[in-house]
Image 1 (cartoon, rainbow, N blue to C red):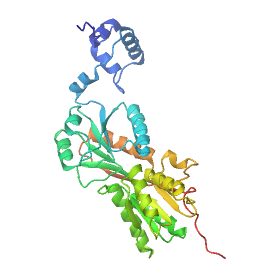
Image 2 (cartoon, rainbow, N blue to C red):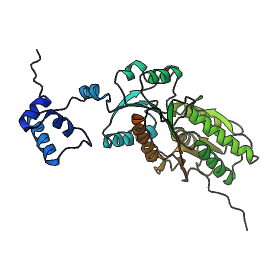
Image 3 (cartoon, rainbow, N blue to C red):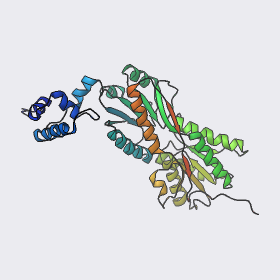
Image 4 (cartoon, rainbow, N blue to C red):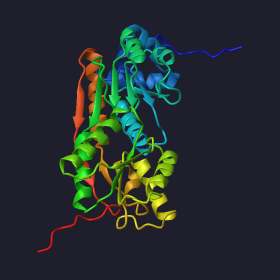
Length: 339
């Protein structure tokens, strides 16, 4: 038998000598209420053990203050960093993060039915594709969608990315300046916009400079697949002297294989470059040259879009931010002409 007694807003109002609406305003960020009245209400609520029912409030005002976040790969440090930044930014904005794993199956996306049960104010997809089914269901439920580190052809969704084309071209220029002749590209997941943009920019720059197209293997953005792909590349008779990996997870796998299985001097005999610039890239054990994605700025833009979409659900926007190449010991220094 459950004989637990819940304290209500009416109880707090009576004890504090205020109206129920004043109690509601005291627990609403940004609401107009005299500071001394708010303090009296909060002290009374704490003494009585009152906690506002956020779910009931969402039924009244039509907003849950919950942002759903679908994550495709929690093994990627870039998305762990993003989740940490996003949770702090949302909390500061009075919003709450509800995470949905989004892996497995042919459509790597959160369960549609489960998402829509929570009356989300917005849905953020971290490197997760937006299927036509999910897009349509979110439209019906009036849940705005923001893709993070992905783009989509769906005009009903917003996106926040770094400039993958510029990043890939910058990496290609760095490798050519280092005098590399046999360059390889370690691709991410086939069909992802992120991989497509990086590969297209990388190959286009090499072609424009008259350099051969890179050798290609697929590492699926994952450690295990990248390990096997690096072995295939380094076992070739025409072994590459440089590998551009489409993310840092694959680049770290490539460094491990090159050093510990093939005994190569990474940075001299073989250059390896990643993408994202996760915290591990700066560790002395890897000293990974990587193209840095501006995660804090990307998260800031994502939260800005959430606020805008809550006010005007049709105000979709595609944000592209600049990153920067961070050169460390895993890539050969630029060769400068003599004289």
